[in-house]
Image (cartoon, rainbow, N blue to C red; front, side, top):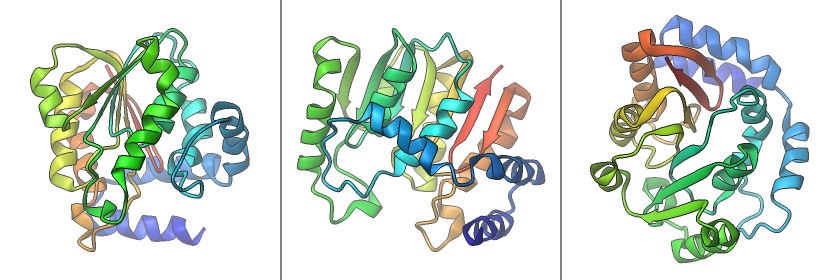
Length: 234
């Protein structure tokens, strides 16, 4: 619960709208202590997963949350992922949505928080973990920045997962580009809403995410705020 109150304090410190804070409070208890439920899903999905550090399974903590909040989404076929790392999230989305395809965009070079990470090994693990999906063309890999990808992209997607460069300026750009490439009725899933790496709290993802929600609230039909944010476009 200590983490919950720290997050509330930080959200208030950056001037988060009350309706977003209340949304977070409402979704906190249903997702509090759900690690065991996420672990069951993890054991099924990632039986032979390769990782440089098996203790760093940040995405796995959200498995129950995502499975629950996206369980009635039947028309997700074309998925875009910004930031793929070793492939955990890509594998989850492909397994969660039958007959779907995913486009994975990553530089495999890291950003500010990755100064000590060997990204040659990270990318190698991604290729090993997703080799089956790459071989049958249900996963398409693009090694480039998200900005470069969106300049070339002409497709629209049913779901876009944003977990790339976490600096506020880049998050803002990724949100705008992703929204423009998202179909009506599609889902935008934003990772690390409660990620507080930078000492200046407003430089973290929560501030541009808040601004984005406020700007586009009239075009949002579903909003779920927790450690990740789920937005459905009207």
